[in-house]
Image (cartoon, rainbow, N blue to C red; front, top):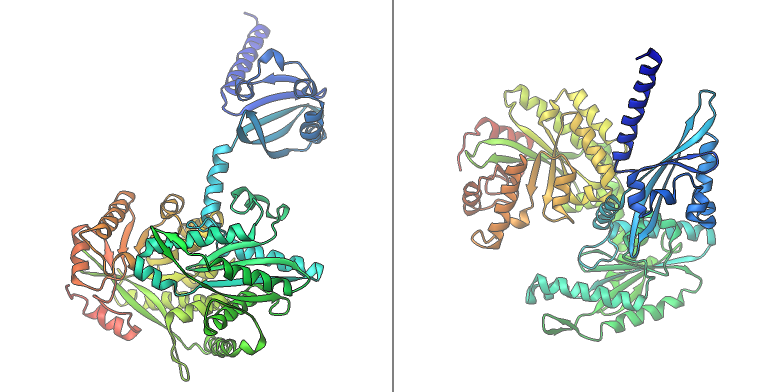
Length: 588
């Protein structure tokens, strides 16, 4: 065989192999020439659209799909490609009756040796399942799983958007903040299941009255929020608290009738588990811009007005006014003292020990922030963190805590206690701080503390606020050899999703599962299942809130890795924790 013939055969075989590879792809692939004519189509393209090859090959795109579809959806992208641009689009198509498919399409120009575009390669892939998965995660992050109403993060986003719009139009925005009266009695009398059913019924009744547009509750709304609109936004932001927004208000008197009608909705009983349950609500109302220029201030003032309604006897409503600011002044005093405390390094770290369940050996600790003021006295940790989070001061306080904990951890390691793991909590704001990773790296570098002994504790709620960003943050921290602990496990939206998405090292079982648990009943079964899952996933499990020997004995029985709680020790000052280290051979 002559060399030219051999070369020709080699080229032909190579072309045939490439053609087989392209045709075997699950993606739909076509090649279109400058006359908008199909030159190559793969089986995947034909099968997806249920069209025969002779119906499409060597025919123009316009002839195959019609003039309207060609000019509206295809020609513009092809024109850009023939000018040398790459184009990516996402769209939904109804290939078959009642079956919507989401398609991602990549248009890629094919150049000649003279840098001219001769063909356009069009590659399409069906991303319907990915879209459904993204929508599900978005729903879990932004909607209340009990009532299917928007939850706090989405509500705050909506309110912020309406405030921005009102700044342009000069109109007002109203926030209604209402809380069910004596809701705790429902839970105490009929159980939490009845309480949950009541919240669902309340949500439905409010939604039916408020008549939000049919996009409320639709996940695809989240994809392009700016192009959607509704007359009001009803949300459940926590517990038995509901809120909703009324934008574009020109007359505030309009809201009085709405408040009265909402109160009237509660005059009829709710049918819950075969019982008629009567419950009322108290409503607080605040307006932008009169009662605040930002989301936090408006929500706080509406909340203050709601408590004034409760003080007035409940089952009523109150507008926020400046004379309600006594509580706000008290809060401002604490805020100012907190800022002063940050500057003067008045915070302390206490350490609660964590023990290996199998042998009762000390293995780590959780660093906890404490604050004692000369006038205020010992400030409740819960109030401290909540106020710091709401005001944004948690960023500075949290940074101080990380540096202080790493510095102390290094001291203890140098004293020979180099087996101790150090857990530090990250709040929601702190976790999403754009400089978080740099701050942690700085703390580790300046203290020379071994990053593999630092455990950053992140709540489920924090991770669900922005899942994709959270994954990226966790991955960066893991690259630094820092350990990640999932805190308050079981109290968030979708715990199993977290275990799948995030590379965590430790799982902290929330104390609500441990305290007063019926270890021979359902509580015990749940805890055992969590521990078993951790073993299979090679994740270290830590039980929080261990307060009795019975709890510890049960955790030993089911092979829980570690435990912490007042049965072992309360949080300790630095000096007392070091004393504990010195004599840590204690057994339980």
